[in-house]
Image (cartoon, rainbow, N blue to C red; front, side, top):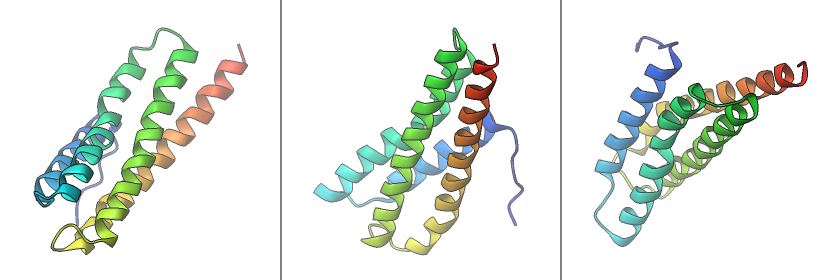
Amino acid sequence: MKKQTYDLETRLLEYSVRIIKIVDQLPNTRVGNHVAGQLLRSGTSAYPNHGEAQAAESPKDFIHKLRISLKELRETQRWLKLIQRVPLIEKPKLLDDIIQETEELIKIFFTSIKTAEKNKNRR
């Protein structure tokens, strides 16, 4: 049983590491390379975008950066499901855990955006 990480920055860093490892397992084919590039881009972007949100210049900027992370996580979720369905890796069932993690991160960012919007409107 893996220990749950609650620090979002660390969690996103570990998530990016896992995405990179998945990308390295994809086949060196036209399809594999296309999917690898897309997954690498979307799957590693939540981590730096979260850092950008932490340095936001305004509540509006903060929300915008969180929305970018959410959008990229949703895209990543789709790529992971596609990799699993084709399948593009030997043991597609191993993606269940990272798909679940992606869903949890999506919920965290969605809730954070709603909270930030509510707090922004109170000012």
